[in-house]
Image 1 (cartoon, one colour):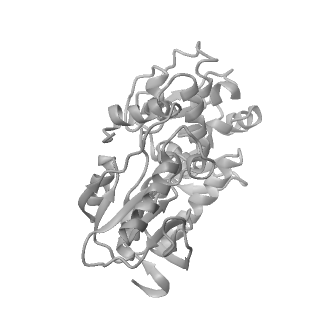
Image 2 (cartoon, helix red, strand yellow):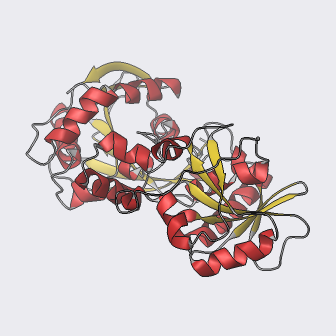
Length: 374
């Protein structure tokens, strides 16, 4: 522990890194508001907006900036595969827009909820040449904004125009969306059903991101593996009682089990929808209603099947003094992810609950495609 309750795994961000993160957050806020930001890399410049919020007025603004150059749309490899676009170089596929493309087309390229309604798009021509940093940083900037990973891009040269927020592409490309650099903010006693001797400890990422919570039950010894659960936040399951998943059962069941055992820790992580956020999780639900399973839905959105990071969880455990855990999980990736971050998993403790008519397929998909022990 260093000054003012900061726990650094790895060392704290430098001043320049903090300023860079502030610039990223300002640019991300512009994208969320339906406006464009500028990514710069040496002489290379690109006006960038999130494809999901594209408007015809925004397209006109960006076409004016691009001049004779066509506007571009950058998609992840997962989303491009859905649209039958072959990969080229790197982690994205970049396609030039035809001159009369409208905002509705751009939005439909990003959002798969429109796929069945607009089945006749394409074929699309991709740019096969490697892209510069300003273009490659466009999708990561959308991720920082917690939007669909699809970007509308207007490359340009010359001076950055007055008005749009500008950020260096190198900073965006080198800054992870999830930081394990945490500040312990506060803690309080909060008696819970099933675990009356609980305290909740709040951790905030040093870059000002979403808070994570540690529910510590009792006073578990630090010299042996602690009974632990990593639980990603699930608004619909944890609080609204959704029957589409088993998250609510897992949360309440874990607290009860830890309470019965006499102590342990549950980490409540701000990683909704396996790391894609509540809005995108609802989009995935809409795709499930169209017949796609939970893994296919995430990938059609342009995400990996699981976008969660384990660095914050490991940092929280280390900050609380725990180096080893008995992990309550059915997910082998949680075991591997924690161990990769320096936390020993001494035992995997099964943590499964009976299915219902609404989540049977969801649980079966997790077992078949994600290797869960169900």
